[in-house]
Every structure is written in C-alpha cells, then in structure tokens.
Amino acid sequence: MVFHWLAGQYESSLHEYYMNDPKRPVLTVLIYVPSKSWTENLRLISKFDTVEDFWALYNHIQQPSKLGFGCDYCLFKDGIKPMWEDDRNKLGGRWLMTLSKQQRHNDLDRYWMETLLCLIGESFDEASEDVCGAVVNVRPKGDKISIWTGNCQNRDAIMTIGQQYKERLSIPIKTLIGYQSHDDTSSKSGSTTKNMYSV
Image (cartoon, rainbow, N blue to C red; front, side):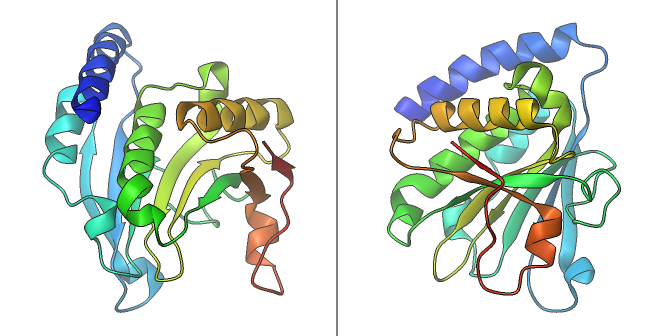
C-alpha cells in the first residue's frame, strides 16, 4: 500500500518534470550477470526518457531481491558506462550503502526504488548534475547500493547528495553511509576502502 502511494506521488511529480524539461536526460538500464569477463556480462536492458517508460520497465523486471548472487542492476545517464574507467566516472566516486543479509527481504527493493526515483527525478537539486548513475550489487555476504558521481573533489555537491539520499531513505541518524573515491576503491589493498566523506 505504501509502495503504491509513493509511486503515485512520484509519478505525478516526475511526469510534470519530464513534460516541462526539454533537456530531460536519457537514462540507460543495464544488468550484469556473471559468466564471462566484466564487460561481456554487461547487458543493456532498456533506455528511457519518459516517466511512463520508466514505470513500464520497472513494473516488468525482477526486483533486486530476486536476482541471483553476483548480479547487478545499473542505471546511468546515457553515454556513461558503469565503469570506473569511463571518462565521466574516473575522477568520481560513490555513496555506498551496504545491507545485511536480513535487509535483502525488508529493505533492498524499497531502497533501490527510492534510489531510482532520486536519479530520474533529479532529487539532489543542482548537485544532480554531478550524479552519473546508480548500481545495486546482489551478493551472498550482503547487498550494496551506490550512487556514482563524477567528481570526488566537489565536496559541496557530494555532501548534498549524501545528506538528501540518507534522508530520502529514512536511514537512522546514527547509521553512517560513506563516500569512496573510485581511485581509492580501485587501488585498495585490503577488503575495505576508507571513506572520503560520511553522513
């Protein structure tokens, strides 16, 4: 019931956004299914530039909690690949939220939907310009959701995105989410990466 109410609420405001903005972004949805090399496993699901197309797609694909371990969904602005090496990503980073195994059934799908709505509705005000995309990783030890940005040195935009994202997901104040640069993540020596910022 709450899901449908939220969808209706955002659908109305997103419809207005898409109808009134001739420069609306085209977004690309991809899925990663492990079997070969990383780039060979990445498959285009769809591209959309209207709220109607988004809901048609969203209502007909599996929720992240139903994907197999090792699979990812990626939603990126058209022309940006979900890779650290992409020109729009290489100087950036990501807000990363790690969920426990128990959260897969209670929170994963809701958090992912809210993340998508933040991106397509450009919910971060002027900081939305810095957002490149989002990824959900389904993993046996715990799932991850991240919002990728284009410039890890743009502290004001990054903090705006992090604070508004945390608020949008209703994450408790005492629970921290961290921002990691792609450079730090790609060159890490252990299993964790230090956070540049946290909220």
